Image 1 (cartoon, rainbow, N blue to C red):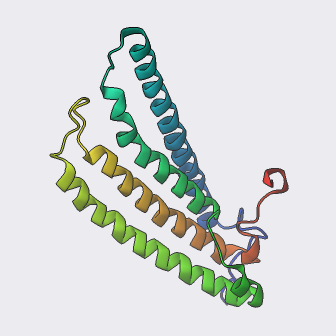
Image 2 (image 1 turned 135 degrees about the vertical axis):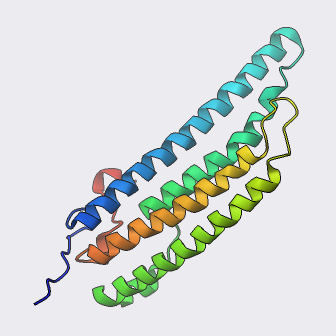
Length: 188
């Protein structure tokens, strides 16, 4: 006699694998938010410092002009990872509404598996880009351009990890339509 898989009503609780996946998803979400918010704050403060110094001295600091080049890719990748983790990406709902729960589960699991494999490969390729750009240096800050390109590794790896988490959520949800259902207090 084999045990049937434990299905959670919303993909949020249930088996140890699902709880672990949700924990990983929550950590990934918070890290991505921290990266994105930190990038915005640092870019703003650096550019504000440049404006203030230029206003009072008619000469710039120089280095704040390189900060957006270093941190904007991290801001973008942080947002993309949050979107992937929360299922807040563009989706075509027509096919989803025509499928029953079992067929939709298979479709979503296949999509998440394909996304996980594709973005894990892209993350691996980004290591080569980082290696190539390591010798290129920003003149004022002295940071290597690999710092900015490292955001690709975080972004692609984060999307791959989010896809694995979502695959597990879909596998264990009683109704896969409810996995990324927005809670009413977060609706706009």
